[in-house]
Length: 185
Image 1 (spheres, rainbow, N blue to C red):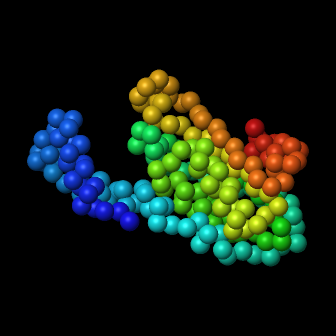
Image 2 (image 1 turned 90 degrees about the vertical axis):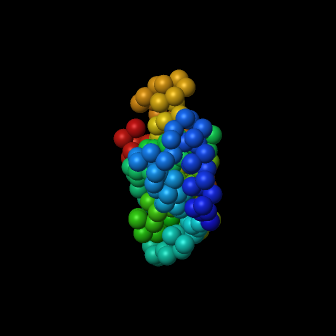
Image 3 (image 1 turned 120 degrees about the vertical axis):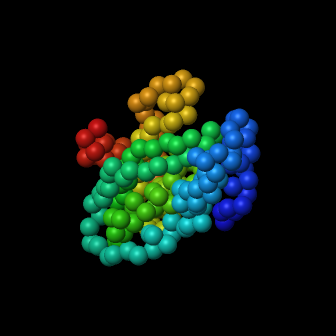
């Protein structure tokens, strides 16, 4: 649970630490604004992806379902800087599918936490396997990391790509190839 008071204290200390005057007009309400913002951008810490993936619909088909270009924003746990990009999800149903918006909501649950991209990719794939029991799931994330673009090596536009394969996607390389063709990659 987000502790507004602790966040506000920490922001005041941070501002003082970089040499700012926390009483000046532009910064006076900043600690409170940051605390409210953190409640929003780290709201996934309190959420369970299973609640979004619980409502399924029966289907006879076992053809690949792909939801691509799901925009997300997350925060790198190493530097507390944003990383953002697109998630692409595929799964092979085993008698049931989930509403497409639920895939995007699942991405949000895990993205709205302090994260590593590699971990985020795996968490989404694992949640699909656990809560939907498909024949297989594949998650690919392409993201730009502010810790690489605004500091350090300073290489704007560079993309980190991660992939998590579960079930039949691990066993059948042709399915992965089909996924990439359908993405236009």
